[in-house]
Length: 357
Image (cartoon, rainbow, N blue to C red; front, side, top):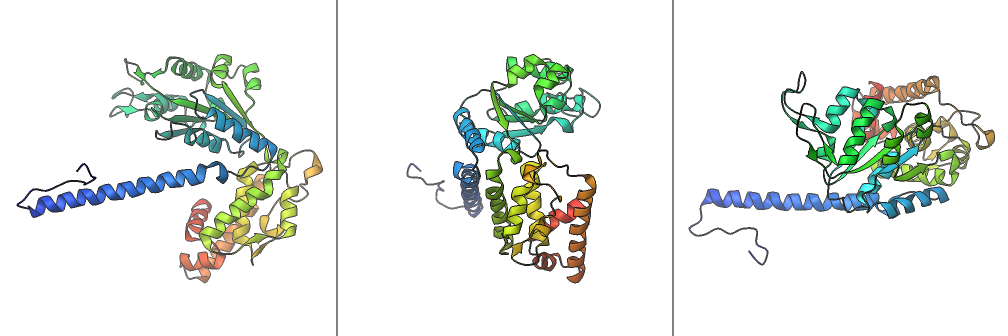
């Protein structure tokens, strides 16, 4: 046992005991392999070399994240939608000594105030109608790790006071409970609103802002760091090539169109545009027509264009038509339809689900 044996069995052998011991050993080995695989995935996905950052701004942000990740200080990430705020939050977790603990993410905009309080702080049995049992909240579930509060500007002023108390005291009181519970949590918050304006309008507490803004991180929109556009686009198309096995690259015209576009939806819009282009491309070269970018949107225009709902409807309709034609041509065989479209089955399933097909 000291030399590494999993277990031992004394003679005379019992077949049932032997089978149970071997099964436990096999399960343990499987869990060790899975754990090793997940650690390798985390290291590869969130290693500094895996993050696309060519612009001076992006490199400065990553340097700041590397320096503050080991601390326990709260971090406030501000930036437009689609700039990568959740990625920065995950880097703060995976580059810290809390990487062995949980990473819990909450979109504060997705919950009504009463539901959000229960979601974050937990509740006791019978605290409200439907509370058939006690439940730990996100603060407790993130104990020893990191809690990411996205869209923090969306919570009400009354709830902000409760959140401030938790951050100051380091303990939570479940809804319907009477005994506070200590929590060891590193909090990272994010917003796409300028909080100084929210404070001036009376919609955000100044004391909570200062409590969250110990380490401020500002993410510039993609139009202000154009050196990152093509490296990001090549990163996304490389992922598609690996998943589908279909060779694809950008034509010089497509590259020029992407470099001229204002990207009001930032990195998320770029990723979606590359995915659309990979689906719509007729050959191995992606053209500007495959990208379906808004016309007349050039880098020197001075103001970002607006991605209207009508344009998105048109884009979805084109993608829907291509998918329907491919599925009909394959007589319902989705695997064959995906091959004909040059995408993998998972991408086809995801698109069909989003488009309601």
